[in-house]
Length: 296
Image 1: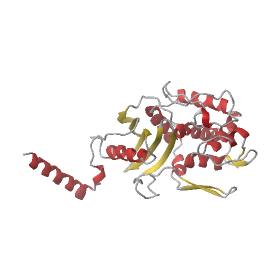
Image 2: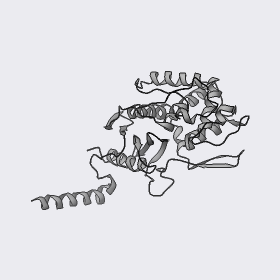
Image 3: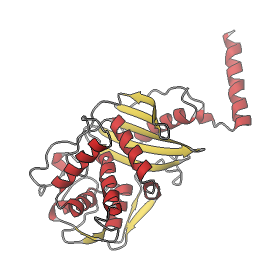
């Protein structure tokens, strides 16, 4: 009897593939996730399709730059800054650690250049320079980040302490002394933040989906840190993926907030705390396959 049911299931799967165009990798059940936490959301309905430790706090590293990106875009829309404005690089911005462009104190770049570098390459020096340009100091920018978090309904478990998500030890020797503490975020809040950003500024996808960005003034080209972009190809590429943000912290691991759209259905995924760079994309694929299969 068991063999008969097994054969019938295999036959049904084959018919779905042939007649309905369902891809084999979409015929999945609820996945087991190898990460600290993970969340999957249907963006249109805001329904949480999967929640694995989604309310646990974690150091999100570069994922927190989604809030930095949001505030930059709002500052442009409000007329506070312009995309072609020149941004001065401060001593502090030039000396932050982690992923950066080795920007030099006194150099100038446009808001547009630095924003694209933050969105695609997650450069910390570019993020600090933008924060200081918008608010005068990073401290004031952080206040805006937390105010915005409250406004859009993020929980009290999510707290921003700087514009980059870096730990204190990576902020460099020139950080302001009142920039202290570790940014913390939950996977649920990261998902809500991404949804708010995509709903209110869908043009972010045009930037986040670029394979590469350049800084002509420095003759530099930076590749996108999102290996799941459908345009990139390779073992981690996922059909329909066009964003959104990676992060890494030596203590909390590798993170990824992803989004993909198929047949008018857009999903937002959050994977926090995998052991390897590749792992965050492997786990995200599981979530996407589950979501696009109908979340059975």
